[in-house]
Structure formats: structure tokens, C-alpha cells
Length: 94
Image 1: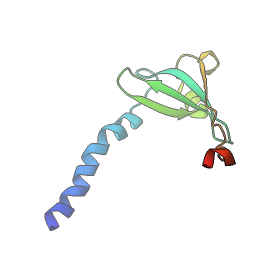
Image 2 (image 1 turned 90 degrees about the vertical axis):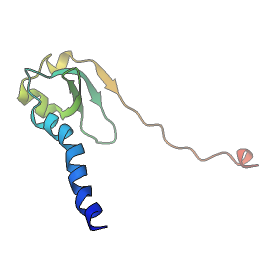
Image 3 (image 1 turned 180 degrees about the vertical axis):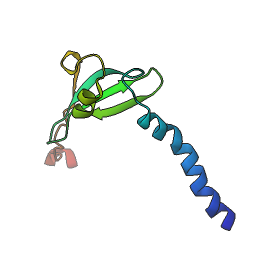
Image 4 (image 1 turned 45 degrees about the horizontal axis):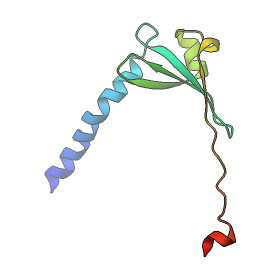
């Protein structure tokens, strides 16, 4: 039982390491922007960048400061809207 408790954190850190490495090594030379996402409900806009193998979402400020290409204004926009959940009509409950 003790071995399982000791192995579990090591396993989690090994599995999480590739994603963490990609976050740190995302440079404008290897990553390019593919689209920007317009969010509603006061969520910040994000930009998705890729190196052809993995995808990372950055804030607009991180994208502009990092000097990624193409320019933010030239990226296609993906609009995300959530429809409100409606309660079923009384006739539907029968």
C-alpha cells in the first residue's frame, strides 16, 4: 500500500511533464497562431497557437508581447456562444 502511494505522485508528474514542457518552450519561432477565440460572459479572449504537434492557448497580451505570427488582427476569429438553458414546457413533462 505504501508503494502505491509513493508511485502515484511520480506517475502523475511524469504524465504531466510533456504538457508543462510545451507551455514553457512555446516560442514564436516554433509556434504560430491558428485562430483567436472571442469569449462571452466577461471571459478573456484567447489565441490558440500550434507547432504542428500540440496546441496552447495564450491570452491576447501574451500573444502580442511574444511576437507570434501572423499578427493578431489577421487571425480568423472563432466565436463561442453558449445558449441559455431553458426549462421544459409543462406539456413536455407528461
